[in-house]
Amino acid sequence: METATVSATTAGAPTGPTGAPAVEIRGLVKTFGQQPVLQGVDLTVRRGQIVALLGRNGAGKTTLISVLATLLRADGGTARVDGHDVRTDPDAVRRVIALTGQFAAVDDRLTGRENLQMIAELVGWSRRDARATALAALERFGLSGAAHRRAATYSGGMRRRLDLAAGLMSEPAVLMLDEPTTGLDTVSRRVVWQHVRELAAAGTTVFLTTQYLEEADQLADRIAVLEGGRIVAEGTASQLKAQVGTDVVELRDGDDRLVRELASDGTAADVRALLEAAASDGLTDVRVSIRRPSLDDVFLRLSGQAPESRGAELPDPR
Ligand SMILES: Nc1ncnc2c1ncn2[C@@H]1O[C@H](COP(=O)(O)OP(=O)(O)OP(=O)(O)O)[C@@H](O)[C@H]1O
Ligand SMILES: [Mg+2]
Image 1: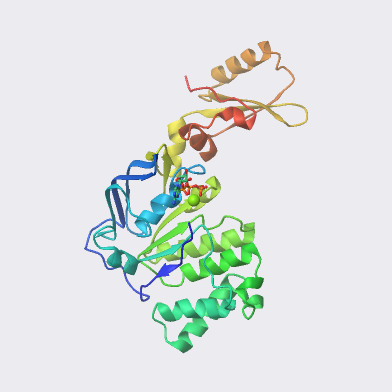
Image 2 (image 1 turned 120 degrees about the vertical axis):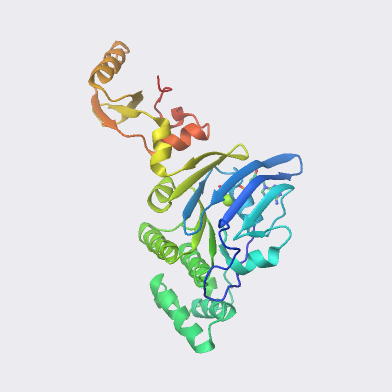
C-alpha cells in the first residue's frame, strides 16, 4: 500500500464527541477477492493509550490501519475514530488523525527541510514557525546534516526517519503508525519510542503496528494480537505473558546452544521431574536456566506458529 502522510490537524486538542473511545472497531470485515483478511475484528482503544497491533506477515495489520485511516473501505462492521464513523464521516476522521505508512511517503524532489516545512505549513504553522519547527524535527531525528539534501539521496533509514518526523509533526488526536521502526537502527528506534511516549503523555492516542515484540513490550500500554482475521488476544504485556502461564526451563549444551525449552510451574519438584525426564532422553550434560515467559512465547503460541521453528519445544502447560 502506498500511503501518503495524512495530516490535517492544526496543532491542538482532541475534538471528538466527549467520552468516545479514540478507536472503536466492531465486527470489521474486509475481503480481497476470495481472500477474507479481516473476519470480525473487535477492538477498543481508549484515549491517551499506546496500543500495539501485533500479527505475522499478511495478518491484515496494514489493511486494518488503512480502514481506520479511511484509505480503504471495509465490507462490513463499523469503525469509529475519535467518535467519527470512518464510512459516513471520513473527512472528520482525517481531521483528527495522522498516519505514517509502512512505506515512506516523502517527496524525493524536496530536501529534508522542505519536506517537513511543507507539512508544518499544511498543519497550520506560519511560514517562519514552520521552518523553525522543521529544523527542530530534523535535529531531533538526527537529520540536521542532511537537511539541505534532496530526499532522493537519503538512505532507507534516513527516509524512514524523515517520514516519521513528518507524521509526528501535527500533534493529532490519534496517531497511526504502520511499522514505524522497521529498518531503523537501535539508536533511531529509541528516538522514535521517546517521541511517541512524549506525544502520548501529552494526550495523543497512538495505534501502531509492529513486527518487534520488544517494541510492543517497551512502548505499548496494551497489545492486541491479530490472527486469522480476528483479535485473538488483548491486554497489557504482563497480562498476555500471564496467559502463557508457565515459566520456561531452558537446557543448553556445552556450546551454550539451546537444546530444549520446557514449560514448568517453576517449583523445585516440577523442575526436578523435568530434568529427570530430559535425562532419560539422553540430555544429561546440560546447563539449566529458568526464565519467565516472554512476549515471544505469547506471540508464537497465539499466532499458531510452531515453537519448533526456534529449534526447541515448548509443550502445552499441564
Ligand atoms: N489491495 C489488495 N489487494 C489484494 N490483496 C491484498 C491487498 N492488500 C492486502 N492484500 C492481502 O491481504 C492480506 C493482508 O495484508 P496486509 O498488508 O494487511 O498484512 P500485514 O499484516 O500488514 O502484513 P506485513 O506484516 O507483511 O506488513 C495479505 O494476504 C495481502 O496479500
Ligand atoms: Mg503491513
